[in-house]
Image (cartoon, rainbow, N blue to C red):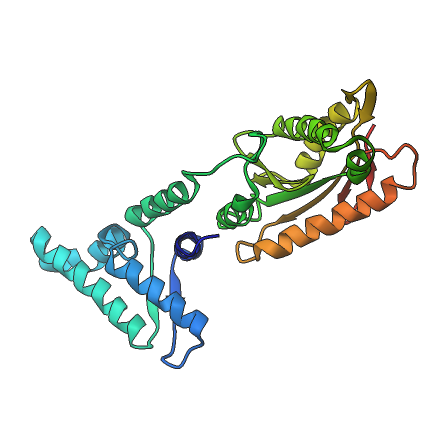
Length: 297
């Protein structure tokens, strides 16, 4: 992830946090750790730029309490000046190490949409042109996690071909590439409005589903793996069968680190792979935390 993309993601996370909390009270003392000081800098920029505490978030509460006190004759310019003064007061409190109260309105939400678009606008595909390239996994998962809620989990699936090394060793890399393309094309069929797929290196792939439960994703993956497992790749008159291990994890915590969610899915993938290899031929299998491994087929 580039430094610029990382800064944008940090800005998005903070805006999403304010939106989630509706009213965020922040206190960063002068001697705070570097990470908190960095957070204060980003919040100060958002306040100064008008993405936080803009006039829209004060309109109803402030007008109801103050506007009527002037008999309804307060000039709009005077009222706008008061809103601007309140916003700058919050900025001074934030920079001065005092508690500041932050709210988000329409400009802040537009900024969130702009940040998402800017970070994902120039994504590229993997070498086969089928799934998104691995360089986008961590950033896109970070973007998705900003929207995690109790009723809208972020679900991740990690895929790995079983015994793929044997295909390369016995039949050569051209045969391996043919198997990879069939496998990646099968995973591409899972992509939809809420689902993205990435080739994360070699024969590994990652799926990110926003607002979809692990149970629903597990069902969709089961169907996709059944189709892929029923397919054989013919290379030099040799039929090569595909077998895939998959692990699934999910989160409703927008503060969760991307790597921890991926590690949990990876752990489930290896659990599925281990159980699948107890059978011959090795079947495709899906692991989900807290559930028995599902043997596909």
